[in-house]
Image (cartoon, rainbow, N blue to C red; front, side, top):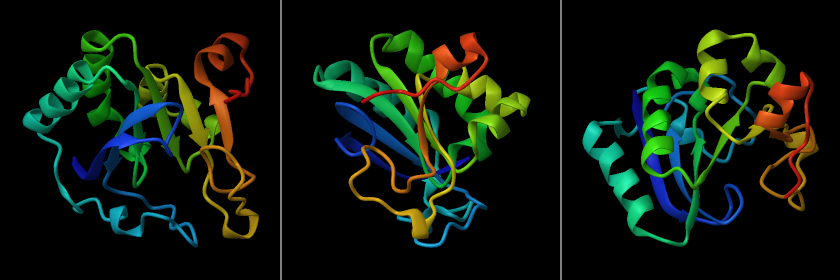
Length: 166
């Protein structure tokens, strides 16, 4: 699995100051995508143990980091590869939140075992493809009106989508 980049201090990809990992690989091809260079599954560099160590060390050593965000590309295409990393993050930095962005909808994700396994480890999902015709720059943490902020834990417990309110 490759990553297209890392932003160690983002305020745009979830609540608070977050470390953002941009995974490589996406087949959604959203018109107007903000990160088209991440579409190739070979873009960027390999997501090595050393890079994972660097991310976790940074989170542990930086008290103002409130979370980690998995973005892309689309991290759900690499769900099986990301799950061990997220388990490690939860173990070594248990007080941070985990957000995940995906062009897949919540309904699509919960019907796929690999994606569901990763989803269960996260706190907030921003779901749905970016739709240029529905673009709205006033929305917090998403780009178009069809995308939803979803409280993952509450949704899984309730069996229906529970919105996350920023």
